[in-house]
Length: 264
Length: 307
Image 1 (cartoon, one colour):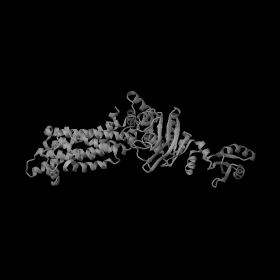
Image 2 (cartoon, rainbow over the protein chains, first blue to last red):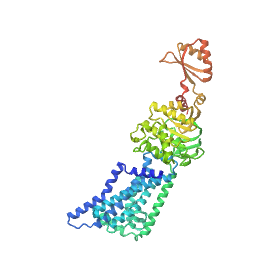
Image 3 (cartoon, chains in turn yellow, purple):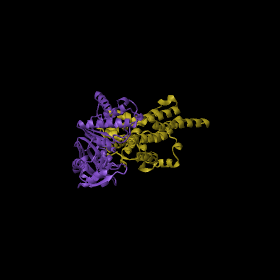
Image 4 (tube, each protein chain N blue to C red):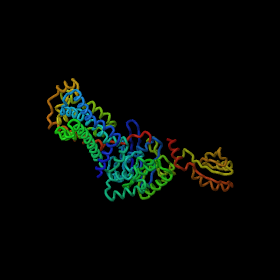
């Protein structure tokens, strides 16, 4: 029961007007781009290739951007939200083990991330294939794998939130820097990115390269090592989830979260 | 019930608490000190939010940091005015009681009782975001009391309370102490503290300056003569007579009130025992008699000046 209350509390944190206002444009963005794509194709009297459009936007926007940024926003908030609003003192002076507090709040964030990216995917699917196309196998596959990405990115973001004082800065660097560039670097570098394994698990084959990157990115991608088998990707992602969450629970159980009061 | 044994706490290069050793028994103990003295660090160490850098902190015989066994028996009312603003007062207290292990009827009863104790039953189902400062203070107190703890840490519990509220809170704290609990109250409103307890811990610049009975501590401060004010229709003559006593250091007439005489003595006890005879023998008419130094404010001022 206490876990359920903490889960609910974390979930309620995510539906605050400020957070909803920040998430809404992200959720709508892929669908809006799909509509614009469709309109541009019609204006040029070219055929609209639905699968290419979906794969490009799902791979580039939903998996490559929205999932990561929402995981950073919600995942770092698992601890940082309580620290910033200074309510963490009430939670940390109760007999509930700290690891349970973190896990319950993480699950709330995980559900929040998953529901948001699912909504974005469904809207994109509807915009590309029409409402009847929501049962498209690619859409259903993505809906199935997005929670894996939410767990992996959410776990890492929660770890950042538990370990660092300003996790959002590091999280944004991770989202816009690391996860954008490491997957396209040559050699073994790309194996240091969650996105590499996620793409190996959920490939969006028909991605329109002109939409996702320039010539340099395409060149670097061609220089990369052999593709990672999905099974390996699955195991690496599972290990990432377990390790990041385990570390986050350990740090949260032993770290001090009381701010220093200069003026007592 | 609370023990600090050479406990120090540093924040990097900044000292929060320096080599503090003390024991806080059952009853009310006031934790006093000016801003930045280390009161909040003290409270955070005892409430298990911080670990001491060196030394030991124990509550009910155990180290409190992240210790569930201690938190079952400890209630903490923090100074911070932060809440889950969307919740009602009852939801807030219920949440924290649930995290404390309460379920079912026991949970409902505990929440109801704690809300009643702090006088928040009529407003318990309103959103915390709409509460006045005093109500927020009361609901914070309710969450500290809900699990009927043996040790209660109250960090500035009177902030935002009106005079009636302060009185009610003082009575509540007293009744809790009378039931055998250990109550540590940090406050800068010395008047309220003085009305609750004579047992004090005085901290200044991270060090424990004084510990024990307020009047006993006052008596130990012999560097600062004890002030006694008297009102008489013959203050000049009375002052002259009092200056004849060995332990009286000075006698001064008040500029604004010609009938008021302020005397300083190094030995208040001798002064009080000698004064009646001196007044009677000299035929003086003394209408008022007070000791401005016998209050906490004066003790606090003297001790912090000394350090």
